Length: 259
Length: 328
Image 1 (cartoon, one colour):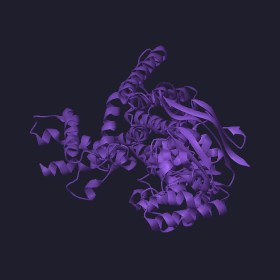
Image 2 (cartoon, rainbow over the protein chains, first blue to last red):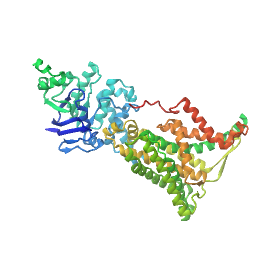
Image 3 (spheres, each protein chain N blue to C red):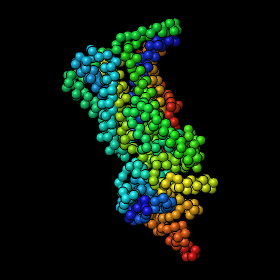
Image 4 (cartoon, rainbow over the protein chains, first blue to last red):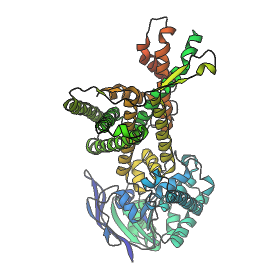
């Protein structure tokens, strides 16, 4: 069963075509990778799904409901969360507070209750902190809870982005180059975390990634973009042997040599 | 000379704290909006002034109805503060909605000019309404809390003279302190405060984490303007007479206080406000003495701003400010 369906999705910026007529389905509970050379339009695609950009044409449906034209915070509420290619944490607030921003929509935060310091508001604050702590534990960052986010190591910052995204309680998690800049050990831990999240949190994961070893190991379904168009789709084995994909990555001629 | 400065020090501190508390709360409004939108909301001084007029108008009306005579003065004050701050809060939110939000993507300078425009609009609107109703745009409210309290500071240190203050000083100071502590708690401990700090750092990412950015910005304007309006009421009670132009200079000074403390920094604004108030009162009491009569008390602003320039020369980011890298 598909959780996300895109049909004829196109995005143009003043003549530049970033995504051209892209259509595919993402199966519920799957790990899907979107790959392609730099400038293929992968992040543009993520930006359309999360409401940062409005598609020029085409439709994006999540569980039968259209996402086109919705504001980013509404789409977040519907259950789509993401991380960023270039880390975008709230650098000068604490690690715990970063996760608490993600919890925003799951707290009532009644202004009146806060002003009158009602017990229910106090309980909610405690709940928020405990919940944020639990998520930090889940990704292995609990020990850093009071540190400023920007003081974390690079790999830890990427994990914190995942923790913050998890706090919004998503159904679909979009990871934009989660392994970028990671050393092999960190990449291994990330792979484990992605599998664990899918199993335990009932998530559908879509990731953009350049680390082909990671992509081939982790994904069940791969979508290949080049110059904004979908050039191939299939399981890792099919993609590995697809001449169009080899050509896109290595140039004309490489495909015939490989076969 | 030192002895003479010390004679007046207790009085300088009392007057400085009263004025400084007012600067501090108005500065909070500037600093919060700047922190979240990088906009210098020049209309904020006029929100303060509008609050002073609304508060005074309510007091005059209540007096006319004979309620003030039967009500405990503190209760009347509380009522006026609450009504005024809610009204000015909505005015601030409305200004953001109508004048600033459509310009959110325009260059900063355009919004700044709009803010100056809104500022003139509010001045003339208040002046017009007051003139129509009272025939004069200078307004004197009913006098409240005017009894003087003597403080025997000379018994603490013999070099001090005794000081005195109006009862309203206590009101100004206590209400200001409550407002500042509440705001600090709100920003640091609640879901909405956390969202405000997140939006101040990265608006787009906050939206992607499910934060309704427009609601948060609206809330910032509501809070800043509600505090500013309430401070206007305090000002009217402490200093008695108001006119539609009090917001201009006071707004400039509060903005200065926000810069002094480090713009965008809440605690910095509080500290900067108090510091500026005390410096100004110190200058007003001692300038003649310190310069052998060359400069009189009327040069107090020059003195306060000279200190500001000195601070900013050595610490351009303000006392509590952090060095910010320009976003690329």
